[in-house]
Length: 162
Image 1 (tube, helix red, strand yellow):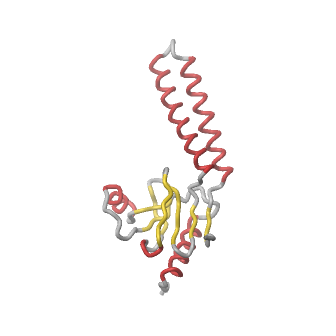
Image 2: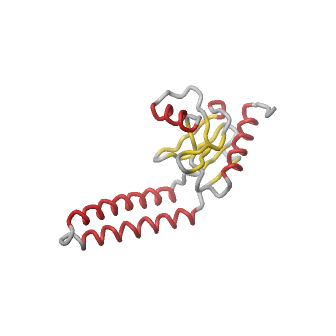
Image 3: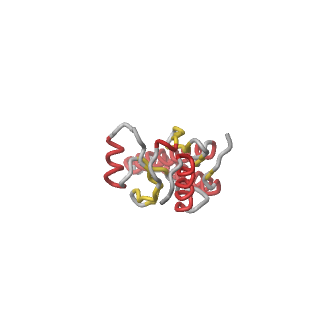
């Protein structure tokens, strides 16, 4: 089914993250191995940090293959969170709004009939919504994406914006 809305992440931004985290991982692991005899504890710390950034680099490569991008149509919207793609019907969500999550802004919404989990309770108490979409790498301003989602939701469920 054709998408009414599609916001894939900016690929150049993802490539920069892959290269940056990969280079840091290679440097940290390489320097950690070289430093092993002189400073064993420092070497272990560098190798662990390098391993973490190697994992981060793999995660960004995964995003290149299956982006976290947002897609919406007349039935609902979908996005990828961590390793799974989520699909949500318009009738199951509240109005979308821009909220602050730690130090970044995200698109927040409440999911109707969702299981009340500790994560959702923490989200609700800190952001005022139970679920959110990271929109930091989309090629459009977050306010524009949020407004477009609300427009599609209202059109799909027949709610006026009065």
